[in-house]
Amino acid sequence: MEQLLNNDWTLYCETTTSNTVPNLPIHFPTDIHTELLANQLIPDPYWRNNETALDWVHESIWRAEKHIHIKTLDHSYTLTIEQLDCQAAIYLNNVMIQRCNNQFRRYDIELSTLTLGENTLTIRFLSNTQTAKDQFADFPFPLPYLERNCRLGHFNFLRKTACHA
Image (cartoon, rainbow, N blue to C red):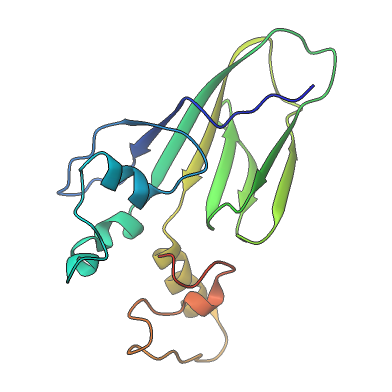
């Protein structure tokens, strides 16, 4: 039995910024910038110099939550996620069940801790920028990057599409 979980998620900004972001209903597949743009909460990031003014979006931590109701535990449940960009943690009922760090792989996650009734599935989207900085700081020798080519440094430490912040 397959159940699609694409719809009826709520997006929250966990990071306190000067930009107030309301909780937003979202449907996957999507990304944070697309949802903020669709709800007229940010200007077009590709217009003129808007990109740098929107750095707070990729520097923030975001959370998507969905409530699922389980009627029976007669069989096993697996959550399958593809193209998750990139640094994320998945929780079931506030317990981390998967840490994701590669946009190019598929994750098949056994949901063995489901309970009868209401369950909460959470995806925390961590800051790719901060993760890249942390991995660079921990690396045993300097690994240069060209700032004129990419103003966000050290994304070569991440397994993700280079043009997504």
